[in-house]
Length: 113
Image (tube, rainbow, N blue to C red; front, side, top):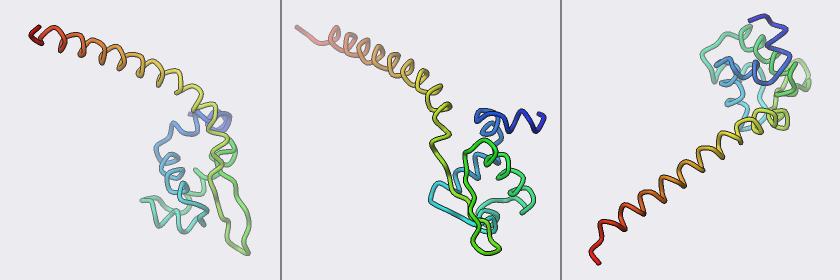
């Protein structure tokens, strides 16, 4: 995948497992690159590369603290992904509701009257 397409939208950015791992590492709060490297089985250059992609699409924000760069999650930019997934969540909920109704009907048929 070309770098430009990965940085152009949230869907492509989170499609890569290492970037999802970085987002998971940042869910607890702001961290320096070194702390993220310690949390994950990746080298510092790899983490920095993925942080750059996540930053380009707005999923993480960076601030300078002396020589360190501290990164934090910006979940607002996950909204397009959340809205897309919400449709599928509703479809699954509808199916589970129908399954509940069906199971209740079968159980009701097996009861003596």
